[in-house]
Amino acid sequence: MTNDMTRRATAEFFGTFWLTFGGCGAAIISAAYPQLGIGFLGVAFAFGLTVLTMAYAVGHVSGGHFNPAVTIGLWSAGRVPSRDLVPYIAAQVVGAIVGAGVLYVIASGKAGWVPGGFASNGYGELSPGHYSLAASFLTEFVLTFFFLFIIIGTTSEGAAAGFAGIPIGFALVLIHLISIPVTNTSVNPARSTGPALVAGGEYLSQLWLFWLAPIAGAIVAGVVARWLHVPTPKTK
Image (cartoon, rainbow, N blue to C red; front, side, top):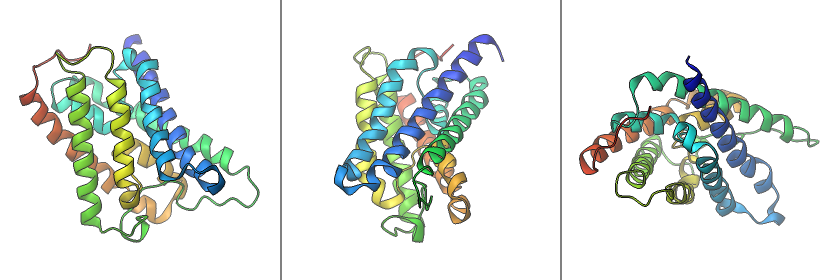
């Protein structure tokens, strides 16, 4: 890889690490203590804040995707060149796996702690509310579609410059408030992969859905947004 791509991939690694570590960490560590009172709302805000903070920290370096579905959706919208797909997605997945690994080391430092689902995503018996595969697929598809729709719209020509991180972060908060009971919220294949590797078993066997549905929703959003918004040049 060129130095520029190495720099951008590194930014994606740290951004996805932070998203997985921060968002899942709030669910695994803080939400485990009812007296803290963060609940679903706190976990939803934790995920939104990870994206908001990293969008401003490294968004100017890599574009701030932190999510294979976002990278692929932006590619389908004509915003990302094909050559960026593999290095970006690889960096995101590795970042999520390392983030989940560090979180596991910290969480397991508590006596008697067991990983359980480890903030993994699931459908059927592994869904927090026992939602079906079809309901879970549709939830992930629709929410990822709108996540990309918001990302592309807020970064398009004519949108308020420098403020995209705020609506994108809040969109992720809203997405979690809707879908935590359904799938425990993915809309991000990398975020799903890290925790599933720790949880293992059935969570790994259901991981395919949390790649397929978000990517499908992102591609459709990219195609629609490519028609709707004024075209912008591809990144670097």
